[in-house]
Structure formats: C-alpha cells, structure tokens
Length: 297
Image 1 (cartoon, rainbow, N blue to C red):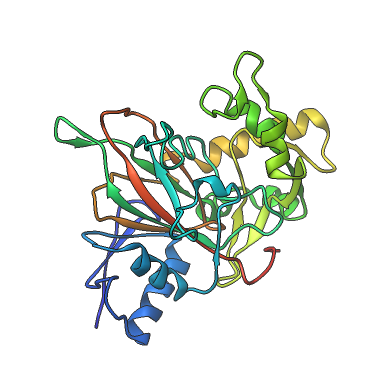
Image 2 (cartoon, rainbow, N blue to C red; image 1 turned 135 degrees about the horizontal axis):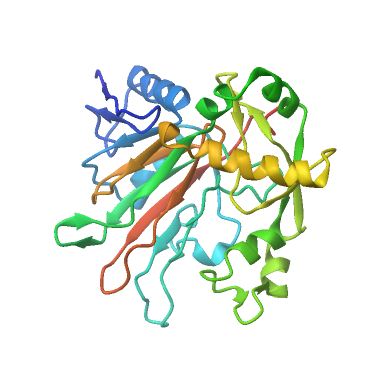
C-alpha cells in the first residue's frame, strides 16, 4: 500500500495517511513509515482503532520495547503499556499518571540510555464546548541545533550536562504527588525509586539513524554544563531552553480520540498541557521504543 504524508507548517508533526495500524502492514509500507519517523521526528496517524495488543504489535515492528521506570503506572494486564489518565479507579487513585510531562522534556532522560522514542494512542480526549483540551507541543531539537551560530555549535558538541533528579522534583513541586508540598522537596521514597540522583548526558546528541545533530534538553532539569563557569553555564542552559522552544520549531497537536502520535526522543522535546480536570476525562496508552543503538554520540 502507498502512504501519503500531509505536511504541517512546522518542521515536525506531519500526518501519515493511508494505513490502518490495526491490520497487517507490508514491509515496504512499514519502511516508508519508519523513514518518515526518522526524518521528521514526530508523525501523526488519525482515526485509528487499536487494542492494546495491536498497539504493542505495531510498536514492536520498530524493535524491543522499554517499560516506564515507575511501574505503578504500567498497565496491569499489558505492562508494556504506560497509562496516562486522570480517570479515578476503584481504589480512589488515577488509573494512570494524571499529570504527565507538563514541562519541555524528552522521555526517560533519567536513564543512562534513554529510549529511542514513544508511541501515544488516545482512547479518550477531554472536550469542552466542542474544543479538545490537553494539547501536546513538540519542538524540533535538530532544527534548533542547526539554527545556532557555528562557533556555539562547535563548543556545545563537546559539552556534557548534568541532569539532576532532585532539581526535577523541585521543579515539579506544584504538580507531582511525590513531592513534600509544604517544603517543595523531593520525598526520599521518590528519589529512591529513581536510583542515582544525577545523570550525565551530552548536550548535543547525534541521531543514531540519520546522523543529524540535535540538542538534548529538559526544562528545569539540567543543573550545570560540565567544564563551564557557573554563571555562563546557567545563562546558556536558560538560553538553550528558550531557543529550542521558539515558535518556528514547534508543532502543536490537538488530540482527537483515535489519534496515534509517534515521537523520537533524540529529534524532539515535548510538553503536555493540563488545561482540563474531571469530569473531563483523558485516557491514553503509551508504548516506549527501546534504544538499541546505545547512547547517542
């Protein structure tokens, strides 16, 4: 079958048409899908109808899967699926993570070898007055890198950054239930669940399949650039976070039930919006593509 790519005005977020992800996908068609994924960093499929098994089967066409680091949010029957939802279960708790990713980030940065990418399928989308809520924004880190001056690119190419888990928890103090809210400090149990406090990543990563250089950023998480003066490091981190999320690099996805969105964790960063609450329901299933290429250079 032949697929069609419908381009957005942004550098990413292009829609792939002409394929039913629930059915068999021949090798040539899958190769086109994977090529679009590699080239664009974020692609969209509309009007899909997938069971958990079908989503997992499609995801595994790209290789092995990772599971979310905090397994309490993984589906009880299909643990390869990470549940994002504000729906309250019989135990009085949300059936999934209710406040996932409301900051610019790349998924599972808190691991030494972050995953290749993520696949998010919308089962229920909050709608108010006919308008969908809970949009997700995606920013092209490859385009952002390319737009930097050549001398700055050269310096950043050799720079490593410290990603602080404690800083992450403190940054999310107002929304994360694992925070001691009066003090804004990360709970000891939450930190223990995530292992070592700091992770070191290169601030520029080379995409393992395309070779393109991309910025590797997470808002409010990077504590310092190794080898840089403290004031210069702080200023550069703030600049890169602003630069990478400039409007010319950003695609805004307005969800509909049946949407499936794939993003590449090297090629983009993303953030969710929390402009809804119960009784407006949000229910999504995410699968995570393992990084079989190792840490990007």
